[in-house]
Image (tube, rainbow, N blue to C red; front, side):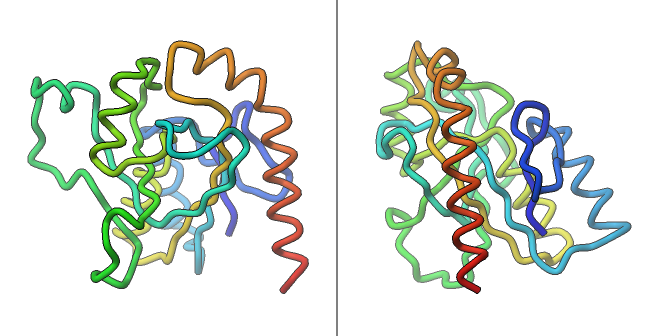
Length: 181
């Protein structure tokens, strides 16, 4: 089953699960309980911490939930903050495309560089929640993302400017991939 965030990021071939960590967790849990899919593929936009360029298409099976306060040693969590559907535990962390999720969008380029030093390359609001629910219900999962912006002061403006083209490029990519099967 192909899923997407929703609101402004809807694709005609994907089921919208909601925006952010809370909406996506609630709606995906409901889906898993009442109509459990055999496989979940999340598609959507992402911001780049600088590793990836605008309109790059990246796949991932690993997400984190690392908040900005963590970078400044102003918070801690007893929870697992990196989760992976990657089955090979010997895969080096630096080769994974780790997607960081938060209900907030990073707009500070210094913080973006700090996220990069932690091995994080992208930011998407929903992916950590998706992996968490998929793990709980034993659903294989992956994500495909298109970069719409860098995580800097222009993040929102660039997202808005690039979003329509990014959705079309991602749609074309998914449709061409599905056509190869």
